[in-house]
Image 1 (tube, one colour):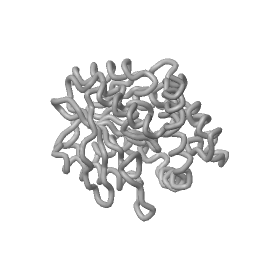
Image 2 (cartoon, one colour):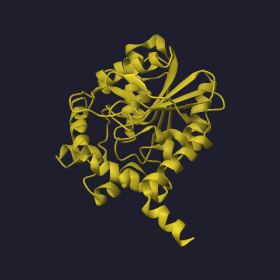
Image 3 (tube, rainbow, N blue to C red):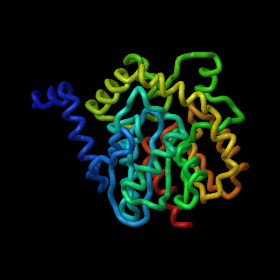
Image 4 (cartoon, one colour):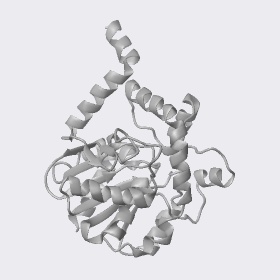
Length: 297
């Protein structure tokens, strides 16, 4: 027993891989063969049958962040959760750009490669912005758009904690240079942190610290488009669903009221006591609300 406990804590990487596999399997998801998208080999998890639901993660995130959310969806839809180019297991290269325009075109190439012509797009943060911009660029390929957690790029009436940090030229709260910064990052994105087994947490911490310099470059690219969605959100005509946590410290909840005014056709819901990642913090409740939206289309 003592050996097993020691292995659990000391052999974090292989244990983490096993736990990730088990969690995927419990959600009826499996890892598909990688797909070439330019210089990237895009890895993605998929499962279920029916209309395609494509789940797009946020900045410095990965496909695994959707698994608990997807568990409720795979019984009715074909779920596809990629590691976007530059993130997770899909590779990142110094000579490549990871701005929004480039990522939208990469998403089109990815969907072509896996044979998906039309899909429901759901995204968190950066992923939500990519979903909305893709719908503007390729409206005939998008059935609906869901912003599961606040999208990046909306100028909120009230400044968030992260906005104030940016305005005062403080370091990004999403880039972890060390363990303390990693812990502060988790406190920033969650109101109530979900349980993360020790090997999973250690894997995430180690990778975040190792990627800090590269993450800083991508952060600067994102900063150039800080309010990009704000300039175009009125053009979004696809059926739209928004879940915004009222405890989001990255993008203030006042943005949800703004979106409801600018997108009168949208179903906008505010989640109480939830931070920036509702699909991780309240996966069942978030998925239930999303499924209700899909059922009304």
